[in-house]
Image (cartoon, rainbow, N blue to C red; front, side, top):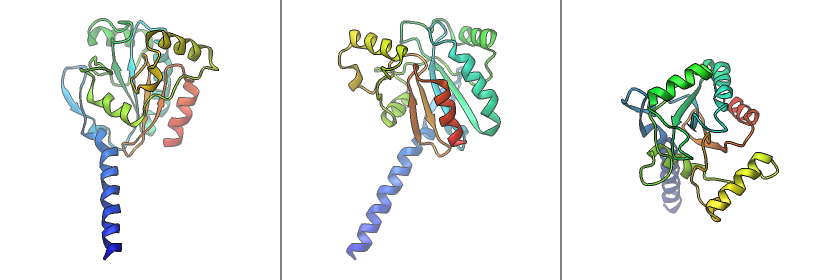
Length: 202
């Protein structure tokens, strides 16, 4: 009897874990047309979810993101772009203006969504979930840009590294085909590393 109860308890915990991991498909977001849509439409896809900005030093990463999308979209990759103006106000303008800029300058074809907050009281529930599953793990300080970002963050908040918050534009979260948030890439990390991680899931 005790063994049966233990098995039931383990099964319940397992099911709750699976349910928690699949919560991403219950999240709704607003697309670039102002319509609320469910992420359930991407179930079974590998997702790279990115908070972006059009006037940032990392903005040229749009070109690399589009290259990833062109190479892997036919194999099940979706890149979900969420412009955010919280970091240096580097994503000004409406979503229409942002989309026009990105298509004109980088010829992007992956979906863009309405502007959001990724931190704070008005943050998107999507990013609340992403940060919970993959909190901040630090910048690579052996990298010049990573060291620069670390020093910049320290000046703003000496305890910044202890918080799961998104630190800057072009932070990327990788989601597998089952809805598990499996990796977080800071904007300073190599796009080659991002590509390799995507390939393992495809």
